[in-house]
Image 1 (cartoon, rainbow, N blue to C red):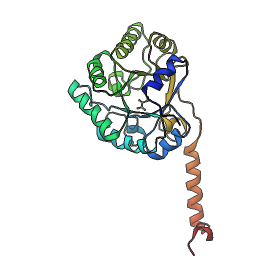
Image 2 (cartoon, rainbow, N blue to C red; image 1 turned 135 degrees about the horizontal axis):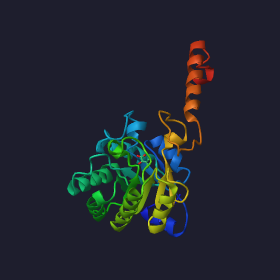
Image 3 (cartoon, rainbow, N blue to C red; image 1 turned 45 degrees about the vertical axis):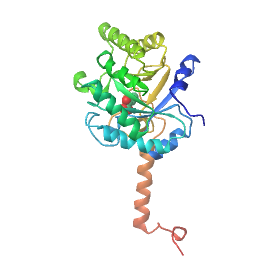
Image 4 (cartoon, protein in one colour; image 1 turned 180 degrees about the horizontal axis):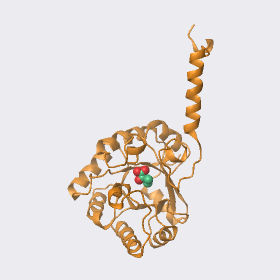
Length: 266
Ligand code: KIV
């Protein structure tokens, strides 16, 4: 399997090929997903909800991101590995941002970091890129800004917000970001952003015209059911399969049907 890099991802836009990305938080899933030749694995800070059971992504630490990135790294066959910078690991100043991005690369062995925000964090993006770390931007519904937005609400609905998002996307590209995730924005706006940029847009709830798509793995295989955004398509119902397997196991143990002779040592 060919190893995917930032160069591969940029080439995809030039060649008009779609970029595929899924979130991933551990070794077993990294092996399964990357065996299918996906382009990018994102160790998203959504692990706060999905793996740690928090209400949102705000409590996630740099150490949490490094721990899960190490696990994914060991199982990844050839996808480009991207890790989220968690809330308050980059906002306060440039030095702190570079230090934390560096830790995630050095200790987690990730290949790029993703950062939420536009013009307000441009100095950080430039400095991280200058430190030789590839950066993916993230605009629209940025979950770390949930308290500012007043909930998980689609963004970019009025003209002012749309103009800002386009300006943010251009600024990210100019600062050296090699891709931008667009989350929960109108399809028409995502199309416009995609058309003005030379770097790929990767949509989640941003419609059909982005250069690529990303979903949270546990949403798309029916593992995480606390809440399911409208933009998710469920490709499997693994949660129900697990429940049925556990039910059968409990029943068989209680009834003395498991273990059988073939499960025992002579
Ligand atoms: O943390 C995450 O999973 C993400 C995706 C929703 C893009 O940022």
